[in-house]
Structures are given as structure tokens and as C-alpha cells.
Length: 385
Ligand code: NZQ
Ligand code: ZN
Image (cartoon, rainbow, N blue to C red; front, side, top):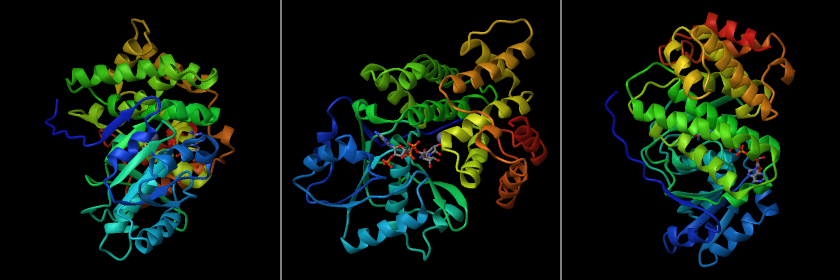
């Protein structure tokens, strides 16, 4: 196991009727900006609960943060932050609202000229406005991590950043609010969480037995609860397990002391930017191909994944791997998610466009062994038609 340091400063407030507790978490006298997305919070009672909890505070609102939050929109929010002297941000929504608000928090304290440099040039974030979260969609883990992904619609880029100042101060996770999510978003949540675990697990063995077992536990929970969560009527306990699994999948714990991959995400982001696939849809397309083209590098972990997660048995390890890849794709499809580029109407030329974009940014040779060359990436994407 590699050396590591670990500190997660996010206070999680989990369970039914927990939204009112935000009033105790936000410092008295704060001038708050409540950020939200396209309006789902008005239809499911979340807004009313937040408004009531904030009745003793001065607060302003900024809505319209889109899925895959746009830099351009966040710059408009920055104007409000400045104009109203905002000193606390409250993100109410899914990963996009949370990520967008993390960017806004960093941009508000950014000393350079162009806050996009935070994503594009890796300009350091030296401080940020404090932010809290009321989560309405479980998928990204953003509620308990320091990551954010922002899209620039002018330059056609979707880029991540992270900083120690970007952790939320608290995140309220009330599984009841997941009730109004459309099926496609429920499926997206399970798949995104699944692939987050895979990116930190399916690499090479590093004698990190506890992390590997944790990872397997989260994967098994997603496999057990995912189909009911997506396909059956809402059930609070199932939603609770799905929600907590998604948070655990990307709160840093699974990555301690182990190599990590993230190539599936890197490729997926380009598919989202170029062809508008939802984040999780892009991952469901790429991941089975990743397992196939990297089967030598990932051999030992793929065999372990086949045995411990899919409970497969065969003397022949190659058959185990073949079956594990099939099971994974079948799992995504069982959640009614398409897994092929052609099913999303993506043309063959799309392959070169994805590769060119990654090459342009020097992001080729991805993965835990930096072994995913442009050529292998081409093979991978060709397999996914
Ligand atoms: O915008 P509103 O009207 O709120 O509707 C949203 C949106 O249309 C809707 N929704 C959210 N909660 C709802 C609801 N609808 C009904 N009932 C509810 N309770 O769902 C739609 C999708 O929301 P979005 O926030 O975009 O989804 P998600 O949470 O999957 O976030 C995706 C974004 O997170 C990034 C992705 O790249 C993408 O930009 N990621 C962030 C990560 C991180 N910060 O650690 C890691 C991930 O790998 C990922 O890259
Ligand atoms: Zn993801």
C-alpha cells in the first residue's frame, strides 16, 4: 500500500427530514446565495424546506445552473456574489449545481484575471467562499469531495479542478428527496457511482486489502440495490443505500494507498462535450471497452472483480474476464441505459474527434500505467459501436 494522508472535513447530515438542520450549520448573520438548477427544487418541496430553514438569514437566489454546469452561467452568478456581498453559498441540487457552486466559491476569491484558468491552466485555488450542500441527486460524490467539473461552451471544454478549499462545510443527504428523480437520473446515479469505484479498484493489486474490500462492498451494494432503486417504486431504505453508496464511492476513502485510473472519465467527458451524452451514459459506453483493451494490464484485478463481485467461477482466467465484462455491460443495460456509441447516434468520425481533443490537451496515455495510447483508445472506441 502507498503512503497516504487523509482528512475529510465534510460534515454529513444524513436521513429523513434533515433539511431544517442547515440553519444550525450556517454561521449566524451570513449573507447567503442559494444556487440551484433548472427548477426541480420547486416541484418537489425542497425549495420550500430550504426557504423555511433560512428564514432567519438574509439570502439571495441564483437559478439556471445547467447539467454539466457552464462556466458562462457561473460568471453571472459571480456578479450576484459581488453585488450582494455574499459570504456563504448554499448549493441545492445534483452534482452539477454542487460542482458549479464549488467553482463559484473559488472564482469569488480568485485573484487572477480569468477564473477559467482554474480549470484550464490549473491556476491554484488559495481560498474560496464557504459552501454548504442540500443534495437532490445521488451520483457524483461531489457532496463529500473537493472535486468539480465545469464546461466552457465557448471553447468546447469540460475540465475538472480540485482544491482543499472546495470541500463543502456540510452536506445534507435526505434520501426522501430522490423520490422525484426521473428513471434516467436514477440509473445515471448508480452507474456513475459504480464507475467511480471501478476507477479506484480496477487497476493493479497494491496489497491494500481494506480498500479493495470496501470497493467490493460498494459495488455489491450498487448491484444489489441498483435495479430496485431504478426500476421499482420509490422505497426509502433502498434510496438510502443507493445514496450512501454514491457518497462512499467518491469521498476519497477508496483511493487511499492505491493506484487510480480515471481514463474512462477522461474519455467520457469528451463524449459529453461533443455529443451531449449524460455523464453516466458516457461512462457506460466506455467502461466495457476499457476493461477489454486493458485486460493484460488489469488482469489480476479483473479476475478478482469477476470472482468477488460477480461471483463467477471458472478455471480459465480469460473466460472469467470475458464474463465479467459481459456482466458489467448487462448490468448497465438492466438499468435501461444504452451502452453503444451507435445507440446515441454518434458517427464513426466521432472517434477521431475524441482522440484529437485528448491529444490536444496532452491527455493521451491515460490510466494507472499510462498505457492507454491513442492507438488503443481508437481500438476501444471502435469496439463500442
Ligand atoms: O436542474 P434541475 O431542474 O434541478 O434538474 C436536474 C437535472 O436536470 C435533475 N434533478 C436533480 N435532482 C432532482 C432532479 N429532478 C427531479 N428530482 C430531483 N430530486 O437531474 C438532472 C441532472 O442533474 P445533474 O446535477 O447534472 O446530475 P449529476 O448529479 O449526475 O451531476 C453530473 C455532473 O457532475 C459531474 C459530471 O461530469 C456532470 O457535470 N461530476 C462531478 C464529480 C465530482 N464533483 O466529484 C465526479 C463525477 O465523475 C462527475 O464528473
Ligand atoms: Zn463520474
